[in-house]
Image (tube, rainbow, N blue to C red; front, side, top):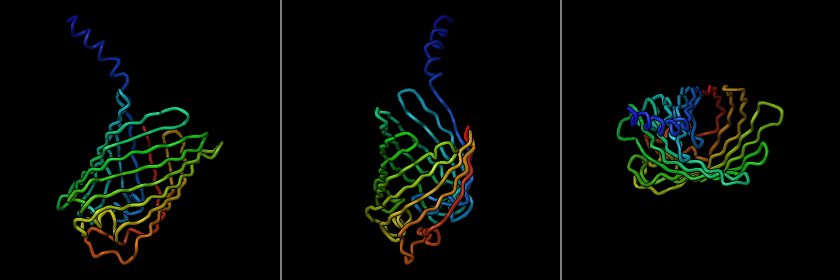
Length: 241
C-alpha cells in the first residue's frame, strides 16, 4: 500500500505536465501546398494533441478527403504526428516533426511518411519562419518529395484579425511518374497563399487564397486530379478546446 502510494506520488507531477487540447473544423476545401486533398469539396476535420514532458508533442488529425482520386479514392486521412518545439531565446524558435499520413478507404497502398524542420522569429505581433518537409522515397508517392517554404504572420494591433502569407516549392525524384503526380501534378512546382483569420477565444474563422504555377496540361495520371490544382479561395471555421 505504501509503495503504491509512493509510485502515485512520483507519477503525479509527470501527469500534471501533460496538456491535452484539440479542435473541430470544417473547410470549403482541404488544400495543402496549393492543391486539393478533398476533391474540391467541403472537408470536415477533427484533431487532438498532447504536450508531454521533455518538450514533445503528439497529435492525431482526421480530415475528410471525400473520395479524392489523388489518394486512391480515400474517405479520410489520419495524420499521426510526433514533434518538438524549442524556444532558444531572443524570439527564436525551432521545431521538428515526423508524420504518418494514413488513408482510410484508399485503393492501392496510399500511406506515406514525412518529416520536417522549421525555424521562426517573433517580434511583437509579427512572426517570420522557414520550413523544410521531406518524404523519403516510397512507392505510395512514386519517389521522394521535398518542400521548402517561407511564411509570415502578423496580428493586426487592437483587432482580432491575423494576416498570414506563405510561399513554397515542391521537388523530388521520380520512380513512378503516375504516383509522383500525386504530390507534384505536372512535376516540380511553386505554391503560395494569402489569408486572414478572425480569432475570438476558441473560435476561428479564416479566408485563404491559394495558388500554384502548375501547368494545366498535367500528366495523364489517375492521381494528378488536375481540376483542383489552380487558384482558389477557401474558408475555414474552427473551434478549439
